[in-house]
Structures are given as structure tokens and as C-alpha cells.
Length: 332
Image (cartoon, rainbow, N blue to C red; front, side, top):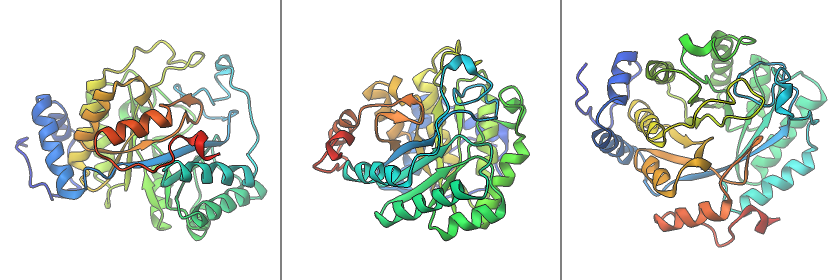
């Protein structure tokens, strides 16, 4: 297929990996220009959503994801196991995040799959409480059954995060305890329950460009596209099998944001993990290329994130409105 710019309002679900890789590999200035054109056709460029992320249950996960310090398989990462946080504590955190300007509150629990019972009921209460604050609510809990997805939908859940991580061919090099089909089954259950889908992946784990394109192809060929697509750069954590991976080139992150924007025009492209290593200028280039959401606050589950005050200043500097109260600490 020619990589000449398609109409900016074109929505497709029949991409090939070769087509997506050809877009990804365009000269960078051409790629960013094309992505920016698509972005402005579907979004207000000043609308950059701020989402806050909280680990509500940390460590002890039975999965063996090579990048994750929460895995029980990676004891040298030194991350202890913590029980599910009380509902009241989570809702206080959500209120503080809202006061600091976040409009979406994301909650992550290190489970392979939640069990029905008191802990799942507590998560449902958290979702209801976050929605009661007037915020979007997102959770990531591992695999879901259709009935669990339906109960989350009834509680008012806005979105469910369940990343593919990488393309199908490379997936087995990173995870052995859950199959690609398992992940796709959960996404189907979420979609059928009427919950928004938040699904993306990680670059920098040793995959090739084709693997990155293959991941985007799986997402872009879903109908409808995911409402939210997180683009993460690996944060190499000591004690995990990927601890020695070199840092991701910031321009690789720009390319992924731009390519995701072109093949999924209406999705929110979330500039997620790894943003702390980017300069202000690299972040702005990602925004120009179509990223329109960031995680706002000092933590991303178990790794450090940009300081909220610095984020607020960056957004103000590029003309994005921010609330008068800035910094999560200021709202506590």
C-alpha cells in the first residue's frame, strides 16, 4: 500500500502489519506532520487529559511478565506484597487527584484474575465512589470473566485497562503464564459489557519494529478501536529479567505515538510509562504527533513519574488550561 496520506477522517479496521510498519518508518518529519493532521481532524489539540494512577493492591502477582517488579517470580526486585487498600483511602486519593486537575482515576491491582467476593465487591465500591466524584474510573485487575465485566459496567466503570504489551510473535518471549488469546478474551468481555477499552503496549523490551507494528495492527483491526491506547516505554527495574535493557530512544516513542494516532484516529493516545526520562521538548513532540493524555502524579503503580507541578507548568507553557491548584500534594 502507498503511504501517501489517507483522508484525515478515514477509519479503517483492515490494516496489515506491512502497512503499519511502512507508516512507522516514514521520515520522521513527514510522519509527525501526517499524524498531527489526523489528530487535528478528530481532536482539539489543547485537550490533553490528565489521568491519575494508583496501585490499590501491590505485589505478589502470579504472572511472570518479564518487565514487572510486581511479579512473584521476580523476588530480587524486592517489592513486597501489600493487601488491597481500603475503599475510603482510595477515594481520598481520588479526591486529591481531582483537586489537582485529573479527570480520570485509574486503579491497578496485581492479580492474575480477581476472585468474586469481598475484594471484588470493594473494587466495585471504589468504582462507584470515583464516579460519584464526577471522574472517569478505570481499573486494571488482570483477566475478567464476562460476569465480572458486567458487574463493573453496572458499577459505572468508564474503561478497563488490559494491555497486549507487544505483538503476538514476541509475546512469548515476555510472558509465559498467560496467552495472547487470554488477553483478547478479556478485551472481548469488556467490550461486550459496554465498558470502554484501554489497551496498548510497551516498547523497549527487545522487540523489533515489526512487533510494534503487529501490536498496533491487532488494536487497529478491532471494531471499534480502543477508546484509549497507552504507549509505554520500558522502565527497566532492577531485579526483573529486563533490568539491563537500554533506554528507549525518545524518537521511537514519538514514532509509536504518531503511528497509533494515524491508524486509530479517534482514540486517546496515552503517553504513559517512561515519560519521566523524556525532556520537555520530547514530550511536546509526542503531543504534536497525536498523544493527548498523560498520567498525572508522582507514581505509576510502582515506578516514579513526573512531578505534578512540573507537568502543570509544561501544559501551561504549551497553552493547555490547568486548574489553579497544582500538584497532588496541594490537594491533600
